[in-house]
Image (cartoon, rainbow, N blue to C red; front, side, top):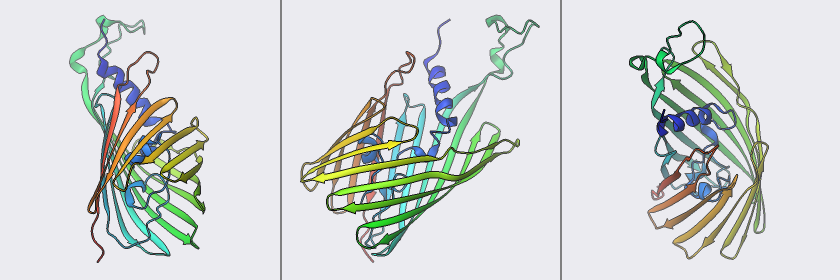
Length: 301
Protein backbone atom coordinates (compact mmCIF):
# COMPACT_ATOMS: atom_id res chain seq x y z
CA UNK A 1 0.00 0.00 0.00
CA UNK A 2 1.37 3.42 -0.96
CA UNK A 3 1.34 5.85 1.98
CA UNK A 4 0.25 9.40 1.21
CA UNK A 5 2.97 11.90 2.08
CA UNK A 6 0.44 14.32 3.59
CA UNK A 7 -0.56 11.64 6.13
CA UNK A 8 3.09 11.18 7.17
CA UNK A 9 3.51 14.92 7.52
CA UNK A 10 0.30 15.11 9.52
CA UNK A 11 1.49 12.47 11.96
CA UNK A 12 4.72 14.39 12.44
CA UNK A 13 2.77 17.63 12.71
CA UNK A 14 0.61 16.25 15.52
CA UNK A 15 3.72 15.15 17.42
CA UNK A 16 5.18 18.59 16.78
CA UNK A 17 2.11 20.27 18.27
CA UNK A 18 1.67 18.18 21.41
CA UNK A 19 5.37 17.95 22.26
CA UNK A 20 5.71 19.83 25.56
CA UNK A 21 9.01 21.14 24.25
CA UNK A 22 7.37 22.71 21.20
CA UNK A 23 4.26 24.68 22.09
CA UNK A 24 3.22 27.72 20.06
CA UNK A 25 5.34 30.05 22.22
CA UNK A 26 8.60 28.29 21.39
CA UNK A 27 8.18 29.09 17.68
CA UNK A 28 10.22 32.12 16.72
CA UNK A 29 8.31 35.28 15.81
CA UNK A 30 11.38 36.95 14.30
CA UNK A 31 12.50 35.88 10.80
CA UNK A 32 15.95 37.15 11.73
CA UNK A 33 16.19 34.92 14.81
CA UNK A 34 14.87 31.95 12.86
CA UNK A 35 17.55 32.45 10.21
CA UNK A 36 20.17 32.62 12.99
CA UNK A 37 19.37 29.05 14.08
CA UNK A 38 16.10 29.78 15.90
CA UNK A 39 17.95 31.54 18.68
CA UNK A 40 16.48 34.18 21.02
CA UNK A 41 18.20 37.55 20.85
CA UNK A 42 16.67 40.97 21.25
CA UNK A 43 16.14 43.57 18.55
CA UNK A 44 15.43 47.29 18.69
CA UNK A 45 11.86 46.70 17.47
CA UNK A 46 8.77 44.62 18.23
CA UNK A 47 9.67 41.71 15.90
CA UNK A 48 11.24 39.56 18.63
CA UNK A 49 8.41 39.88 21.18
CA UNK A 50 7.93 36.08 21.39
CA UNK A 51 11.66 35.37 21.41
CA UNK A 52 13.49 37.71 23.78
CA UNK A 53 13.06 40.75 26.04
CA UNK A 54 12.25 43.89 24.07
CA UNK A 55 14.83 46.67 24.10
CA UNK A 56 12.62 49.27 22.40
CA UNK A 57 13.18 52.66 24.06
CA UNK A 58 11.61 55.23 21.73
CA UNK A 59 7.89 55.83 21.32
CA UNK A 60 7.58 54.70 17.70
CA UNK A 61 4.40 52.67 17.14
CA UNK A 62 6.00 49.85 15.17
CA UNK A 63 3.83 46.99 13.92
CA UNK A 64 5.26 43.57 13.01
CA UNK A 65 3.69 40.81 10.92
CA UNK A 66 5.19 37.50 9.79
CA UNK A 67 3.99 34.43 7.91
CA UNK A 68 5.56 30.99 8.12
CA UNK A 69 4.92 27.78 6.12
CA UNK A 70 6.36 24.48 7.32
CA UNK A 71 6.37 20.80 6.35
CA UNK A 72 5.39 21.16 2.70
CA UNK A 73 2.76 23.77 3.58
CA UNK A 74 0.92 21.52 6.04
CA UNK A 75 1.48 23.92 8.95
CA UNK A 76 0.90 27.68 8.70
CA UNK A 77 1.95 30.16 11.37
CA UNK A 78 1.19 33.88 11.69
CA UNK A 79 2.77 36.30 14.18
CA UNK A 80 1.66 39.85 14.96
CA UNK A 81 3.33 42.32 17.33
CA UNK A 82 2.60 45.85 18.48
CA UNK A 83 4.39 48.08 21.00
CA UNK A 84 1.89 50.14 22.98
CA UNK A 85 4.35 52.19 24.99
CA UNK A 86 8.12 52.54 25.22
CA UNK A 87 10.46 54.91 27.01
CA UNK A 88 13.89 54.96 28.62
CA UNK A 89 12.37 53.25 31.68
CA UNK A 90 10.13 50.49 30.29
CA UNK A 91 8.18 49.16 27.32
CA UNK A 92 4.86 47.35 26.94
CA UNK A 93 3.96 45.18 23.95
CA UNK A 94 1.30 42.78 22.69
CA UNK A 95 1.86 39.74 20.48
CA UNK A 96 -0.54 37.33 18.76
CA UNK A 97 0.41 33.97 17.24
CA UNK A 98 -1.86 31.63 15.32
CA UNK A 99 -0.99 28.17 13.99
CA UNK A 100 -3.20 26.08 11.71
CA UNK A 101 -2.76 22.46 10.62
CA UNK A 102 -5.52 21.78 8.11
CA UNK A 103 -6.85 18.71 6.30
CA UNK A 104 -6.04 16.27 9.09
CA UNK A 105 -7.64 12.81 8.98
CA UNK A 106 -9.72 11.49 11.90
CA UNK A 107 -9.71 7.68 11.64
CA UNK A 108 -11.24 6.90 15.06
CA UNK A 109 -14.40 5.35 13.59
CA UNK A 110 -12.87 3.92 10.42
CA UNK A 111 -11.64 0.58 11.83
CA UNK A 112 -14.39 -2.05 12.04
CA UNK A 113 -12.78 -4.79 14.11
CA UNK A 114 -13.81 -8.35 13.24
CA UNK A 115 -13.10 -9.43 16.79
CA UNK A 116 -9.45 -10.43 16.61
CA UNK A 117 -8.26 -6.96 17.67
CA UNK A 118 -5.77 -6.94 14.78
CA UNK A 119 -6.11 -4.09 12.23
CA UNK A 120 -6.45 -5.17 8.63
CA UNK A 121 -6.94 -3.13 5.46
CA UNK A 122 -10.18 -5.00 4.74
CA UNK A 123 -11.59 -3.76 8.07
CA UNK A 124 -11.20 -0.05 7.21
CA UNK A 125 -14.34 1.88 6.23
CA UNK A 126 -12.89 4.83 4.33
CA UNK A 127 -16.25 6.62 4.29
CA UNK A 128 -15.91 7.17 8.04
CA UNK A 129 -12.60 9.04 7.74
CA UNK A 130 -13.32 12.72 8.28
CA UNK A 131 -11.19 15.87 8.12
CA UNK A 132 -10.51 18.13 11.08
CA UNK A 133 -8.40 21.19 11.84
CA UNK A 134 -5.82 21.74 14.57
CA UNK A 135 -5.75 25.42 15.49
CA UNK A 136 -3.87 27.21 18.25
CA UNK A 137 -3.96 30.90 19.17
CA UNK A 138 -1.55 32.43 21.69
CA UNK A 139 -1.35 35.94 23.13
CA UNK A 140 1.62 37.49 24.85
CA UNK A 141 1.65 40.61 27.01
CA UNK A 142 5.26 41.70 27.39
CA UNK A 143 6.54 44.14 30.02
CA UNK A 144 10.24 45.03 30.19
CA UNK A 145 11.76 47.25 32.86
CA UNK A 146 15.16 48.86 32.23
CA UNK A 147 17.73 48.78 35.03
CA UNK A 148 20.21 51.52 34.27
CA UNK A 149 21.56 51.73 30.74
CA UNK A 150 22.79 48.16 30.30
CA UNK A 151 20.28 45.80 31.92
CA UNK A 152 16.60 44.94 31.89
CA UNK A 153 14.22 42.39 33.36
CA UNK A 154 11.20 41.21 31.39
CA UNK A 155 7.91 39.52 32.25
CA UNK A 156 5.47 37.81 29.87
CA UNK A 157 1.85 36.77 30.45
CA UNK A 158 0.69 34.18 27.88
CA UNK A 159 -2.95 33.09 27.59
CA UNK A 160 -3.75 30.62 24.79
CA UNK A 161 -6.61 28.73 23.15
CA UNK A 162 -6.18 25.38 21.37
CA UNK A 163 -8.75 23.37 19.43
CA UNK A 164 -8.32 19.94 17.83
CA UNK A 165 -11.49 18.87 16.06
CA UNK A 166 -14.27 19.05 18.65
CA UNK A 167 -11.85 19.29 21.60
CA UNK A 168 -10.61 22.60 22.94
CA UNK A 169 -8.45 23.92 25.76
CA UNK A 170 -7.61 27.16 27.56
CA UNK A 171 -4.14 27.78 28.95
CA UNK A 172 -2.03 30.33 30.79
CA UNK A 173 1.72 30.53 31.34
CA UNK A 174 4.42 33.02 32.36
CA UNK A 175 8.03 33.87 31.42
CA UNK A 176 10.79 35.85 33.09
CA UNK A 177 13.98 37.03 31.33
CA UNK A 178 17.04 39.07 32.18
CA UNK A 179 19.37 40.88 29.77
CA UNK A 180 22.84 42.28 30.54
CA UNK A 181 24.96 44.26 28.09
CA UNK A 182 28.73 44.62 28.59
CA UNK A 183 30.32 46.76 25.87
CA UNK A 184 29.87 44.69 22.67
CA UNK A 185 28.61 41.59 24.50
CA UNK A 186 25.09 40.60 25.56
CA UNK A 187 23.85 37.83 27.81
CA UNK A 188 20.17 36.85 28.00
CA UNK A 189 18.93 34.39 30.64
CA UNK A 190 15.33 33.22 30.55
CA UNK A 191 12.90 30.83 32.17
CA UNK A 192 9.88 30.10 29.97
CA UNK A 193 6.62 28.63 31.27
CA UNK A 194 7.83 28.62 34.88
CA UNK A 195 4.12 28.67 35.82
CA UNK A 196 1.72 27.05 33.36
CA UNK A 197 -1.64 25.31 33.12
CA UNK A 198 -3.74 24.11 30.19
CA UNK A 199 -7.17 22.50 30.66
CA UNK A 200 -9.12 20.64 27.98
CA UNK A 201 -12.92 20.53 27.80
CA UNK A 202 -12.92 16.78 28.54
CA UNK A 203 -11.08 17.30 31.84
CA UNK A 204 -7.43 16.63 30.97
CA UNK A 205 -4.90 19.11 32.38
CA UNK A 206 -1.51 19.81 30.77
CA UNK A 207 1.58 21.67 31.92
CA UNK A 208 4.33 23.06 29.73
CA UNK A 209 7.68 21.88 31.04
CA UNK A 210 9.92 24.68 32.32
CA UNK A 211 12.40 25.77 29.68
CA UNK A 212 15.61 27.46 30.78
CA UNK A 213 17.88 29.11 28.21
CA UNK A 214 21.00 31.25 28.13
CA UNK A 215 22.12 33.19 25.08
CA UNK A 216 25.42 34.95 24.45
CA UNK A 217 25.99 37.32 21.53
CA UNK A 218 28.92 39.47 20.49
CA UNK A 219 29.02 42.25 17.92
CA UNK A 220 32.40 43.12 16.40
CA UNK A 221 32.38 45.69 13.62
CA UNK A 222 29.74 44.41 11.18
CA UNK A 223 29.71 40.78 12.36
CA UNK A 224 27.36 39.41 15.01
CA UNK A 225 27.94 35.98 16.56
CA UNK A 226 25.40 34.33 18.86
CA UNK A 227 25.30 30.96 20.63
CA UNK A 228 22.49 29.55 22.77
CA UNK A 229 21.86 26.64 25.11
CA UNK A 230 18.60 25.46 26.62
CA UNK A 231 17.66 22.41 28.63
CA UNK A 232 15.77 20.65 25.82
CA UNK A 233 17.77 21.38 22.66
CA UNK A 234 21.24 21.03 21.27
CA UNK A 235 23.52 24.03 21.01
CA UNK A 236 22.26 26.62 18.53
CA UNK A 237 24.41 29.26 16.88
CA UNK A 238 24.25 31.87 14.17
CA UNK A 239 26.18 34.59 12.38
CA UNK A 240 24.93 37.87 10.94
CA UNK A 241 26.89 40.12 8.61
CA UNK A 242 25.74 43.71 8.26
CA UNK A 243 26.52 44.49 4.62
CA UNK A 244 25.52 48.15 5.01
CA UNK A 245 22.86 50.18 6.79
CA UNK A 246 20.12 48.60 4.67
CA UNK A 247 21.10 44.94 4.20
CA UNK A 248 22.11 42.08 6.50
CA UNK A 249 22.78 38.39 5.89
CA UNK A 250 22.22 35.59 8.42
CA UNK A 251 23.18 31.93 8.68
CA UNK A 252 22.58 29.50 11.52
CA UNK A 253 22.31 25.93 12.74
CA UNK A 254 19.79 24.29 15.08
CA UNK A 255 20.01 20.54 15.70
CA UNK A 256 22.02 20.35 12.45
CA UNK A 257 19.13 21.96 10.53
CA UNK A 258 20.73 24.73 8.49
CA UNK A 259 19.09 28.10 7.97
CA UNK A 260 19.87 31.37 6.31
CA UNK A 261 18.15 34.70 5.79
CA UNK A 262 18.32 38.24 4.54
CA UNK A 263 17.06 41.49 6.01
CA UNK A 264 16.37 44.82 4.35
CA UNK A 265 15.74 48.08 6.22
CA UNK A 266 14.20 51.31 4.96
CA UNK A 267 12.87 54.40 6.73
CA UNK A 268 9.31 53.05 6.79
CA UNK A 269 9.53 49.29 6.32
CA UNK A 270 11.79 46.40 7.27
CA UNK A 271 11.52 43.12 5.35
CA UNK A 272 13.14 39.88 6.54
CA UNK A 273 13.18 36.37 5.08
CA UNK A 274 14.33 33.06 6.56
CA UNK A 275 14.83 29.67 4.91
CA UNK A 276 15.27 26.45 6.91
CA UNK A 277 16.48 23.18 5.44
CA UNK A 278 14.86 20.50 7.63
CA UNK A 279 16.66 17.18 8.00
CA UNK A 280 14.91 13.90 7.28
CA UNK A 281 13.35 12.26 10.35
CA UNK A 282 13.42 8.45 10.20
CA UNK A 283 13.54 8.63 6.41
CA UNK A 284 10.65 11.12 6.14
CA UNK A 285 11.41 14.17 4.03
CA UNK A 286 9.95 17.18 5.89
CA UNK A 287 10.79 19.58 3.07
CA UNK A 288 11.87 23.15 3.61
CA UNK A 289 10.37 25.93 5.74
CA UNK A 290 10.05 29.59 4.87
CA UNK A 291 9.28 32.66 6.96
CA UNK A 292 8.64 36.21 5.77
CA UNK A 293 8.41 39.16 8.15
CA UNK A 294 7.37 42.81 7.76
CA UNK A 295 7.99 45.63 10.26
CA UNK A 296 5.94 48.75 9.57
CA UNK A 297 7.44 51.89 11.10
CA UNK A 298 4.90 54.47 12.19
CA UNK A 299 6.38 57.88 12.93
CA UNK A 300 6.49 59.19 16.49
CA UNK A 301 3.47 61.09 17.66
